[in-house]
Image 1 (cartoon, rainbow, N blue to C red):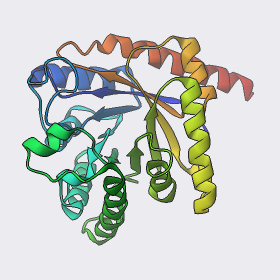
Image 2: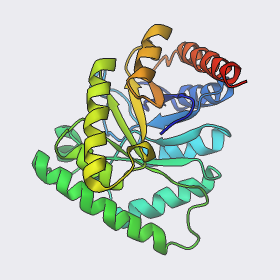
Image 3: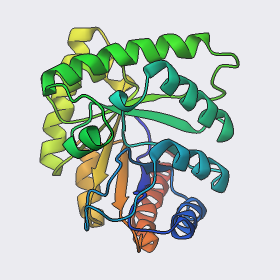
Image 4: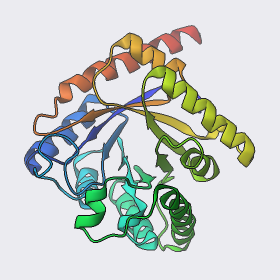
Length: 266
């Protein structure tokens, strides 16, 4: 995908009050983030594993009412925690609630505690990827049947680093991919995804490449990610203090690149 690099934030719904999360969503949207994301885990991934946490999709519905500009999405939702037809209906509903701003991010899941404590069976890794692809096909079929249909484009994002299976599923079905790692690692994974796209008969430029940043990075590092093929950088933020002011640095970098691009096109 070509065009200016976007920036966003994942506001993880853990270790924070509802009021603190609401403030973080609104502030990130006010600052000009291109995207806002939540995750789909039933327990925190950082800090105290028994700390507070909120459910993914009901949280995302609330985000849709607090924000007005940023795309909102799941980074990522586990296909195995909800019936795929139900998940399609949930996504369509949140898409309407947000005015067509939803990105449906899906993944195969990995955290054993999520599965075991909530009573879901946990297939092996390769089986989870195969079931992810089947769920995507079923979900897309349901989306075509829903009345009313999604109001926005409702792009499908697939997250994960699996080079043989996950990236192949992404090449066949996704509009966006989410990965992470150093710029060199992202460049290598982008090349692998391009190869899968060629085998699947897809133009690699059709898939937007998003990268999760687990800590703020310098403008130079952002440039390196862009050179590695990143179309969208997403800063991961944890509660209770989401430090949304650190997102401003990414936004400033984005805006400076856009000014440079506009100047060079004259």
